[in-house]
Image (cartoon, rainbow, N blue to C red; front, side, top):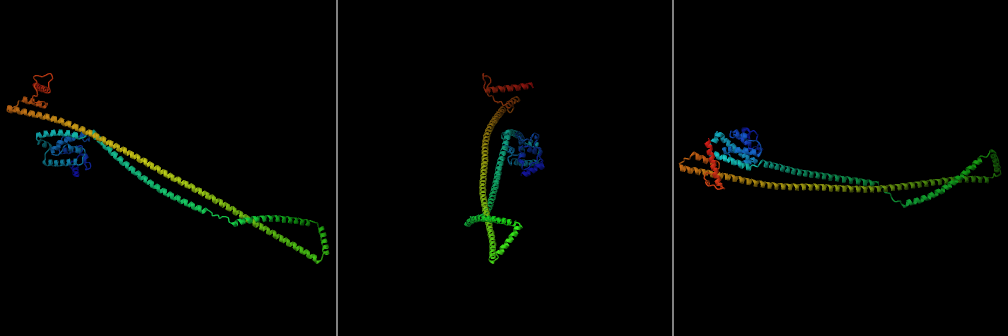
Length: 509
């Protein structure tokens, strides 16, 4: 239905504002477009008095001017329908526009103008419609909230929407922070697992290197001790052999000196010696003596050879013992050095493992402390959010209670105002009805007495009294007025003064 009405308004009627189904209620909430539609069909002559403003006074003026025209077309329109359209109640504007569309189509088929439709109505109906229009305006004024109330409602609605948006933003931020924290926690957990795995791997590699660097040095056996004892014996023999060798060398040196001394003697002495030798040879030329000398020479040569062999053997034994001793000393120094180095490496490895263990403990403690700090921060943040939420809920409850109290006060004031207005209208209507009845009965009585002949002067006086709200019948006598006249007497005096003034005005004319 909304699409059909929008098409009719935009294409056939061609309103000043394009209407869509989404903005249908808001477009007709001020009543300006309804007046424009009626003006297009020559039914709203006072369209220039309409206002496009969205304030309550402009809406009241527009709908007050629309009410007689809509009733003229036979459209069901009262203060409730107007209030629903003003407050943009869904379906209210659509229903009214559909009824208006149907009435305008009927009017178009009949071919009557707005002036002709008004002249066709009875005079009493027109007067009654004017009175209804005034009553409609007063009731609509009571139903439509004041502009200040409407602004307050808009501000309240705006802040409520802002509160809802803020609440949604807070919930979204909390969810994002929670997701971010969970993601960061998962990344930290993966990082810790990877770091622990890498540290464990490095520790295993270091332990493997340490195990590979450890040299298993066997304990010295009893053979090693016997060798040391034999080496000491060899050293002792070596020293003895050196002493013997030194003595032999000294003896050989003395022999060399003797031979050199002999060789340095002159040739004369040699000749003398040769002659002496020849004499001796000639003297001792027997075979025994020669054999003895040869034997002695052989023995001396053999002794020298044996002595040289012993000396060389002794020197070789001393050299072998010295080399064995040097080798044993080098082995002992190497073993001591290796032992000392391996022990130091072990000690350093143990210290390194201890330091790494302390570092691992410190790292774990740091992670645990950071985790405690993070949990504390999250707890503080959650407490702050809970506290802000509690304060917001408390403020909302207080605002709702304040709004309820203000609404109750407003409703109470509106009820009192409506009651006072109703009482005022009721008394005014009762007074007018009483005056009408008094005038009717007075006219009927006079016509009955005078055969439907009422003098103009008397009728004029009665009308003046009726128009000024004065009773036609006499309320009290004013012949003998006391010092403090009653209300009825005062009314009678005012009636007399009014009639005297009218007579004086007619006399002047």
